[in-house]
Length: 334
Image 1 (cartoon, rainbow, N blue to C red):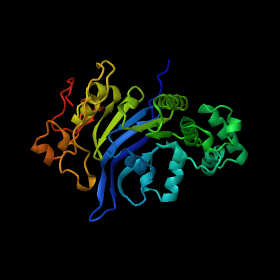
Image 2 (image 1 turned 45 degrees about the horizontal axis):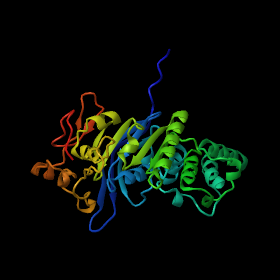
Image 3 (image 1 turned 180 degrees about the horizontal axis):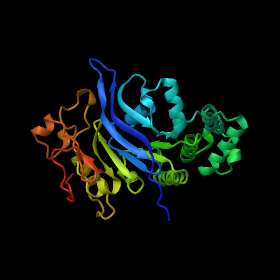
Image 4 (image 1 turned 90 degrees about the vertical axis):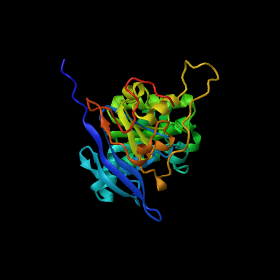
């Protein structure tokens, strides 16, 4: 039997920096972020609120018009960051589908859902009204909407939150993208519906052989659903590697603290949950050294003064930036 071909790189980001306009000086919210994601693979981007997750996605999508962006964003080999706005929007709109956090505000309440799904395909693919309608109905069927022919003409208020998110997924799939991004796509949903949506995303990704990025503050979502995980803190990549390896042997103190804060099924009832003391950094007055130093239990003066360099494992797959990394195979205290 012939070996399956190596997955091709769909998105490659190199040295992404983002400065937002502010007084008295611009605020840097992303610091030299590099990663890639290939077809048929999934990347989880995790971190607390304010870590830079959504800002990174907006930068990739070109949704930060007032920001100063440096670095490269290559989509199927094309550096979209260097393109004029109209050309960039055409490429990204065709090749990237995105599902945002709150389906209640992502859908236009005054437009029938079928029209909202099909307008994307008509604009980017030039489909006729009849062809676009057929595609919209089929996509409603794909995402599990019962009676899609009838629901095509419904308004958003006719659907529950979970059904709205399925419609958002159908909209994201309208142009058959190479990359699907779910930006906190299950946060506004209850736990049972969260699982249904995540399972649906996984099935669709496998069937269509897309690349996928799951953006979340919940480590439980990326566990078992992603191939790699990128941990952000204060706009920096602090750890990046295969998901199973990062979960089993976290090297950065922040990653270890996040994992320690997760509830465990084998914990006795009423066990006090571990927490991370302090607050995420104020990026307008960011720490000089490691951004996690003010909250780290082992930080020294060097941690507060110097940003640690990125350390890469021997096989090149696991990297982390910490002056005092957790020993490989050791369990870190929160």
